[in-house]
Amino acid sequence: MAPPPPNKRIKTISVSRPVVYGNTAKKMGDVRPANAPVEHTHVWTIFLRGLENEDVSYYIKQVVFKLHDTYPNPTRIVTAPPFELTETGWGEFDIGIKVHFVDAANEKVLNFYHRLRLHPYDMSKPSQEEIESVFYDEIVFNEPNERFFQVLMTRPGNLLPSNKTDASPFSKQLELEEIKRIDDGVVEVDKQIEELKGQLEEKLKAAAAAEPAAAK
Image 1 (cartoon, helix red, strand yellow):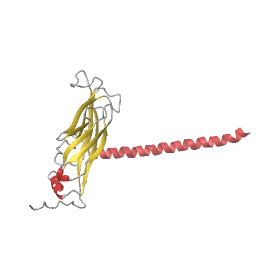
Image 2 (cartoon, one colour):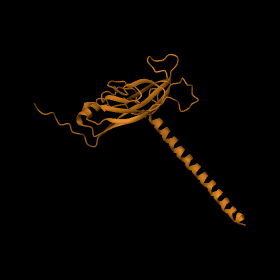
Image 3 (cartoon, rainbow, N blue to C red):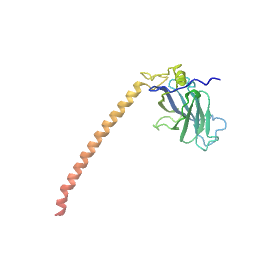
Image 4 (cartoon, rainbow, N blue to C red):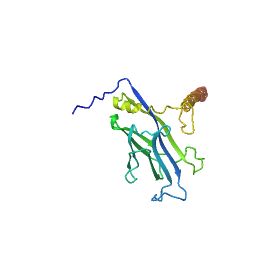
């Protein structure tokens, strides 16, 4: 039998795939999921998906979610899309996420964490409103092998849209808005620092002027 053809990595090539990950959560009402412990207060879902909820299973083989050790079987393996997991709970904690790529990729497992959020940042929001803690990121394959590159090219992948949409709030527009907010924040912090420096200098001058009078 002839040996398989070489599967070389393609130098100087990088391919990225946008993803969103995070969790949604909602406070339980009178109707509770079956077998939910009495102390649990929320239903939540942790997920990893395509930017516009497109199928990502052509390059992701499975996703492993590592829950808090107090959960039965805390290591949960999801082998088919949607790569998500729904549970109940009462507290927030870090969920470990391991992304396993398809065999053709010959890539290492991607590891990261997501902090489960059950409560809104703004506590004035209605308690029954659904909470979202969702982040945008890009999985970058540096110098993919030839076989996996062909797999990736069968679906060029979603690009970050120019404007925000109902389907995907993440966009170039949102990115620019966030950069502007950060720049504005830096300017404001610098302004406050200068004001505090001025106040400190005035207090030091006043203290220095008072010293000779105290000595008399």
